[in-house]
Structure formats: structure tokens, C-alpha cells
Length: 285
Ligand code: C2E
Ligand code: MG
Ligand code: MG
Ligand code: MG
Image 1 (cartoon, rainbow, N blue to C red):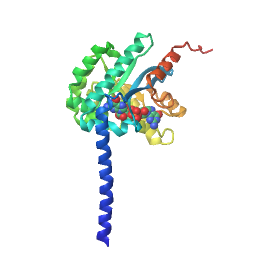
Image 2: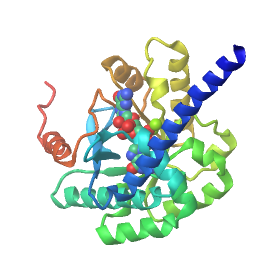
Image 3: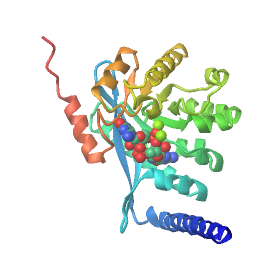
Image 4: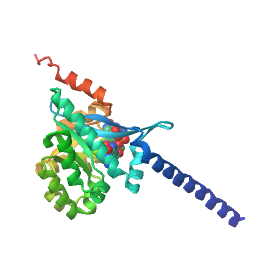
């Protein structure tokens, strides 16, 4: 009896694993054609200066609009793109699209300071990222100071020594570098001091339970102090409420990103935000 049951349980997991593996295989083969089929799109999420709620730039976020399965979120396919190496081509496409878009907004006379683009560790390992970024900047004509590259803390710390060198080379191009999802990747403070970066992005997980979770508030406060002591800009991700915005502003956090300020939107909608933010505001009386 027990044996039978055990076998049943084993088979149950077996089937589920197979299903998951099959889904990944399916998505991988679909992803191979997604670029050619023009199913990939870039959305742009506003980033603001906390002191005066001024729009300062955008983070480029990849979307996959599958012709049959609809919108597939990055959490579902980025890891597949990484495992298969497809992220190299896809990542370059995102970088190129985002830089081209930023250049277009600048040429149209908008006050657009910065386009932030996510880099996967796999792009750094499996391609000549320095050559790619150099080429994309040259092709699109975007001045490097308007490009920011985001690399996750977890990835940086996996191979800290090597990454310090690559990040230094990237930064020498004139682009800025941000550590993404900061607080989740167990940085050694020794390395943090030596990392050639400009910005810390506080991970959303610390922001989302403010003001209910006093530990998260303490951690957030500590990250902001740490960043400022190292002369880095600090951005808080995932701000969803006015209370969170007020708390972070009070702590002197420099920049903000989150649904409270705006969700990721297509280029057309982002352009509307740019136009609105350019409108002269009523001066305080
Ligand atoms: P990330 O780089 O940390 O991007 C921020 C994520 O948080 C985005 O999710 C964004 O939509 C979401 N977010 C922003 N504000 C809020 C908020 O107030 N509340 C909540 N609940 N979420 C918020 P998204 O677009 O689903 O992307 C997830 C992750 O996928 C990204 O995390 C990034 O790691 C990866 N990703 C997205 N696009 C690219 C890309 O072009 N290249 C690479 N390598 N990774 C990408
Ligand atoms: Mg990011
Ligand atoms: Mg992040
Ligand atoms: Mg994240």
C-alpha cells in the first residue's frame, strides 16, 4: 500500500516536472522567433527626483507579446533567455531600442536625462558587452551620459573582482552604473567601496511593507545612509503609496520609481508624461 502510494506521489511530481520542462522548452523555441516576429516591446517606467517630483528618466523594461498567449511577463522568460543564451541578442536589442528612443526624445527637445537599461550577467559573461555598448552608442548617437546600466547586486558579487574591472571599463565610456535590487545580494562592504558605480537601487522588497514593518524601515534608512556615505545616488524601487514616498523623501532618498508615480508604459504614453512634465507649473504662492 505504502509502496503504491509512494509511487503515485513520485509519478505526480514527475508529471509536474515534465510539464514545467515542456513549458520552458516551448517558451524557449518561441523566444527564438520572438525578435523576428516583432513580438518583443520595450516599456518605460518613470523615474523621479524625490525632492521635487520632477521626471528625470525611465527604466526600459522588456515585454513579450506572444501572438497566441498574450503578454508574458519577464519573470517567466528572462531566465529562459539566460539559460539558452538568447539573452545576448535580446539584451542587445533592448539596449539599442532604448538608446534610439532616448535619442529621439532628446532630439525632439525634451528634458530627458537618463535611460536605464538592465544588463544580465549572462550578457557580461557570454558577449563582449563593452564592444556592444560602444557600438550601440555610436549607432544611435545617444550621448553616453544619458545611458545608465543596471546590474544586480547578486550578479556583481558572484564574481566581484572580474566585475569591478568590466564595470570600470563600461563607466569609462561615460555611462552611469546602478546596482539593481540592492539589499538582497549580500554585498561585502569592502567591495562596495571599490565598485565603480553611481547609484544604489533599493530593492522593492524593503519598500513594500513601509510603514508597517519597522525592520524594513530601519534597513531602508541604513541603505540610504550607506549610499550617501559612499557618495552614491540612492533610488527607491517599488513605491506604491504616498506614505512610502513621504517616508523616503524625509530620509533624503534621492530618486523614486514605482506604481505610485507611474507604471511601465509604452513609448507613446511615456512621451505624454514628458510633455506634461515640461508644462510650466504654477509657482508656489
Ligand atoms: P527590475 O530590473 O528590478 O525592474 C523593476 C521591476 O519592478 C519591473 O518588473 C517593474 O514593473 C516592477 N515594479 C516597478 N514599480 C513597482 C511597484 O510599485 N510595485 C510592483 N509590484 N512592481 C513594481 P518587470 O517589468 O516585470 O521586470 C521584472 C524583472 O525582469 C526586472 O526587475 C529585471 O530583472 C528583468 N527584466 C526586465 N526587462 C529586462 C531586460 O531588458 N533585460 C534584462 N536582463 N532583464 C530584464
Ligand atoms: Mg532594473
Ligand atoms: Mg530592481
Ligand atoms: Mg527585481
